[in-house]
Each structure stands twice: as structure tokens, then as C-alpha cells.
View (cartoon, rainbow over the protein chains, first blue to last red):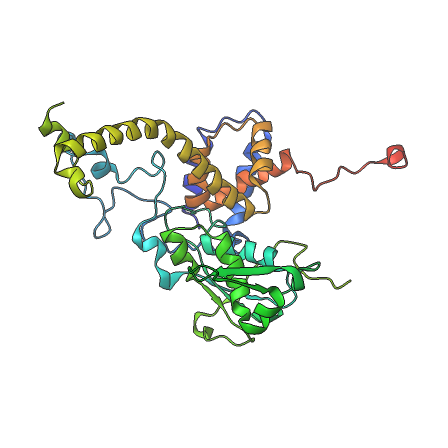
Length: 241
Length: 122
């Protein structure tokens, strides 16, 4: 990717480094161009509204028309030079968060601690693992959870954790333990956990619809080719004592 | 301010607040107070958004935000958070180079410095 090299040269100049080592780092950078796998799935370079290098004078179809020097005063800076990406914080356009192009992840919930798993799931659904994270926009991924009835909790929670709901009428409080709910509707346990960790509001409700929980090990989303969710928590595996 | 100015500022308000002067005047006063306060809040919100983006970008490389910034401060790299977040989004290879610079300067709590010779016994 020879195009990235000129931009790094641009960056080297305003950055004041006191140590002589840093110049060696820029030379090393040339080797990184081949290794895109280490950067993770999120950095797909096919976002239509972002270009790594914009060659401004060459109008490729609907690009920037060349404006002669005498007429420059008539136009705004963004029309002459293109959008200012360095002084304005990037905000995603509609093409940057199309639902059909989002990644799908899959987690097997068997013998995973409920809360720790739900926390990583919520992070991925919200998009907090991506450098393009925006709180007001749904930039996250879809997550499929299978074997939801095998999810584990530590301690005495299996018989002592209570799930409450209220019908709205007086005396309408219904209480169930973790065990009873797991026998009745096992998907609801994982859904309840993840919903509590997603933001509450209009956006949070649409984020919640990106979570798909299933009881067995089958799921109808093979066409989306889900990849295994990378979990970095070391204490997520339930250890029977 | 006379009524015309109030109604001009009340465009897009909900219900009677855009039509009826008594209600519009209250809502416009409140709107101006909010905009005064939020011109100051915007600077804070933007900075926290940059920090969140940098955090996500560095965690892709296995380094968290705190250790990353500490490493940059040690190397006296004075790039601000706005530019760092834009680098993390638009220039991933350059950002990875920065993360490596920071990692060599400050490896973080995980890297225990190896004691050599006599001090390894002590």
C-alpha cells in the first residue's frame, strides 16, 4: 500500500520528537503495510465516504473540480480543497453504518459466566471496540448466542438470583429464581443480562435487536457467516469446584 | 427582544412554543441558556469522545489508553487527542507505529523487568 507512505511523511513533520529513535520507527512502518490481519476485523477499508489519501486535483468522475486561482474567492474552503478531515471530528455518514455490511459474531454460552460474557457482548454490540465508535450512532456488530440454556453463574446464584417482573396491577409482582427461569425460557436470562448493559433509550432498544439468543446449538444465521467473538476476559470460563 | 426576534429563534420548537409568544419567550430563554452552557460542555464532550476512540483503537493493539498516553508523554510526543483519534480511524498503520513507540517507552504493568545476576536472588 504505497499510498499510506506519503501520509505518514506528512504526519512526521508536525510531531516533535526529542529522541532520535522515532525516526527509526517510521522506517519500520513500511513493513506493516502487509500485515493487515493484526488490526482486526473492524478496520475494513471499504467505507465509501473515507479515502486514505485524497488526490484533490484529480477529479475521478464526481471528484473536486479544479477551480482557477482567480475564482477561488467565490467558493468555500470545503469546495476548493475537499472536506477538512483533520480539524473536524469525524461523524459517520449513513453509508458508514449500513446494517447489511456489519460483522456478525457468534458466542457459545456453555459454561461461561453470565455477567462477564454479557459485558463483552454489550461492548461489541455498542461498537465500543471500534476506533470509529460514535455514541449517537449504531456502529456495532450483531452477536449470536447459542447454547443459552448452559450459561453458568458462580456461587449460590443458581438458586438465589431472583428475576422480578411486575404486571402493573397491585400485587402483580412475579418472582422467579435463575433456575426456574432457565427451565422456562432460557434465552431470557442472557437477554436480560445484556439489556441491562446496553444504553437505555431509543438507540439502546435498536441495539438490543442486534442480539440473537438461541437455546440449542443451531441458529438460522449461517448465511451471515458469523465469526467467533474474541473474548479477552480470563475469568469467563466457569470452573466447577 | 421583540416578538419577531423571539419567533425567529423559536423555529422548530414543539407545539405552542413556536407559535404563542408567552410560551415561546420562556422556551427561547431556556434554549439560549442551554446553548451558553453547552458551548462549554461541547469541548468536554468532544474530548471524551476522542479518548473513547483512542482507547478502542489502542486496545485493538493490546494496549489500553492509560498506558498508551503515558508512553507518549514519556517520549514527548505532543499530538493531541483530537489528532490521535483521527489517526486511529483514518491512518491505521501510522497509529500502529505510534502504539509501538508508546509500548517501547512504557511497557505497562504486565512487563515485569527481569532482574539479572545478584538481584535475582535477593
